[in-house]
Amino acid sequence: TWLDSYKVDGFSQKHVFITGCDSGFGHLLARQLDGKGLHVVAACLTEKGAADLTAAASSRLKTLLLNVTDSASIGRAVESVSKEVGERGLWGLVNNAGRSVPIGPTEWMKLEDFTKVLDVNLIGVIEVTLQFLPLLKKAQGRVVNVASVLGRLSLTGGGYCLSKWGVEAFSDSLRRDMHPFGIKVSIIEPGFFKTAVTRLDLIEADLRRLWTRLPQDVKDSYGETYFDDYVKAQNFSMGLLCSPDISKVTRCMEHALTARFPRTRYSAGWDAKLFWIPLSYLPSCVSDFVTNMFLPLPKNQRNV
Image (cartoon, rainbow, N blue to C red; front, side, top):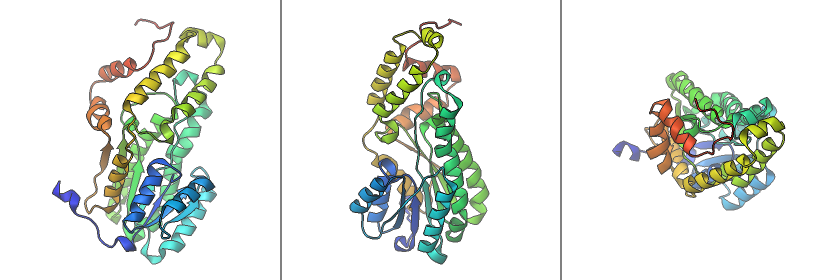
C-alpha cells in the first residue's frame, strides 16, 4: 500500500543490533542495512561468522560474539552497544538467532531435547530483549522478532514449534506493554527457506541419534522402515517447499525497521501466505489431515 513507502529519516543516525548473523537471514540483513547507511552491530556465535561478515560489509558495520543462552555474554553485548549508541539509544533490535534441532516425533524426545531449542529460540529472545529495552526506550525504537509459520501451526514435535508459538505470545504482550513508550514490535513469520535451520544433513543426523537410542519395543511399534521413510518424506517435502530466496524475509525485516508504519506481522514466502497461514485458520481436523499427508504412518497405528 502507499503507506508502506513512507520511510523514517536519518538512517545515518540509527543503530540496529541483530542476533544470529553468522549466516542466513541475519547475515544478509546486516549487509542489506549496512548498504542503506544504517549503523549495524551484528552479533555472531562464531569467530568465523564474524570474520566472514566483516569481509563482506563496510567499515561502519561492527561485529561482536554473542551466545544468547549466556546472561553474561548478553550483558557484555549490551555494554558494547551502549558505548556505540551513546545518548541516542538503540533504534532496532532484531532477534534472529535460532536453532531447529532436535526436531522430530515427540515420543523420540527427552526433556533436554526440548530445552536445548527453547533456551535459544525463546528464553534467549526474552533475555536479549529485556536487557536491551532501556536502550530501545531511549530511541523509541523497534523490536523485530523472528517467529515462523510453525508459530501458527505445529507441524512437528520437539522444541521448535513450541519456541515459535512462545515468540508470538511474547511479542504480542511486549507490543502492548511498550506501545505507550513509542516502541513498535513486529513479528516475522517466514515459511520454509534454505538456511542453516533447514539443513537436511544436520536434521537427519540428529534424527538418527534420536532413533538409535529408542528402546527396541518403541522402534518395533513404528516398524523397521519407518526411520528411512520419515527421512525420505521429509527430504521430499523440504525440497518442494524450501525457497532459496532469503531476501523475501530480509525485505520484511528491513520494512519493519525503516517504514514509518511497520506492520505487526509479516508473512514471508508463497508457502506462508498461500498455504500455511490460511491452513492455520481451518478446523484442527483439516490441518491434522493435511499435515499427516506429509509423513509416513507407523506400522502399529491404531485406527480410531
